[in-house]
Length: 250
Image (cartoon, rainbow, N blue to C red; front, side, top):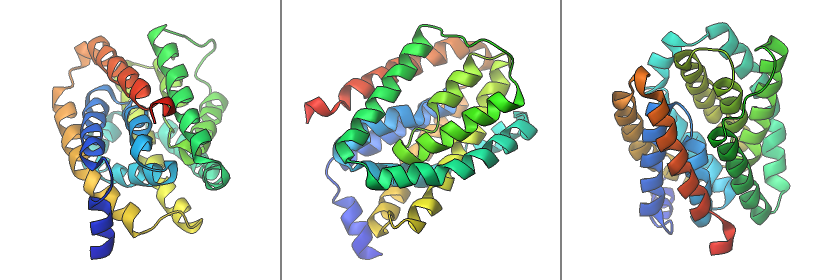
C-alpha cells in the first residue's frame, strides 16, 4: 500500500484533479447532480479513462456519509431502489466496453455526452409523457451502462428527473441516491474485470477528502427556494469543465 500511495501522490496534475473533485463535490451537494459531468472531462486530461472512472467510483464512498443520508429520507424509495437494481445489471456491460475501447475515443465520448446533456439542460428540454415505471427502468438501465463505460451515470437520469413532473426536492433526492450508489457499484465490477489496482484505490481515497468536504459545503448551501440559481451555477461550471477537458488541448 505505501507504494500505491506514493504512485497516487506522484500522479501528474494531482492538485488540479483534487481541485476539480472539490468543485464537483460542492456542486453535487447543492444541485444534486453534475459531479461526474465536472470531474470526468478534466480528470481524463491527466488520467486514463479507466483510472478516472475508478477514482470517481471510490469518491462515491464519501457521499454515503455526506449527502446520501438526508437525500434518502426525502427520496421516493420504491422508485430509487428499483432503478438502482436495474442499473446494477447493466453496469458490467458498460465496464466491458470500457475495457476494450481506445482511451481517446472514450475521452471524446465523455466530452460529447457532457456537452449534449448541458445543451439540453440550458435549452430547457422537456420530454413528453408521464413518469411511468418502464420509462424509469429504461433510463436506469442506460444510466448504468454509461456509468460503467465512461463514468457518466448521471446525464440521462438528470434529464429524466429535471424534465419530469416530480417536485424539485424529490428529483434532487432520487438523483443523489441513485448516482451515489450506482457510482460506487462500478468499483467491484471493475475489480472483477481486472481494471483496479492499488494506485487507483489510493488515488480515489485521496480525492474522496476534497470531494466529501465539497459535498458537505454544498449541502450546507442548499436552499429549496434557490434551485434556479444552483442550476445556473452548475451549468456554468460544467461548461468550463467540458471546454477544459476537450482532447484537442492535449
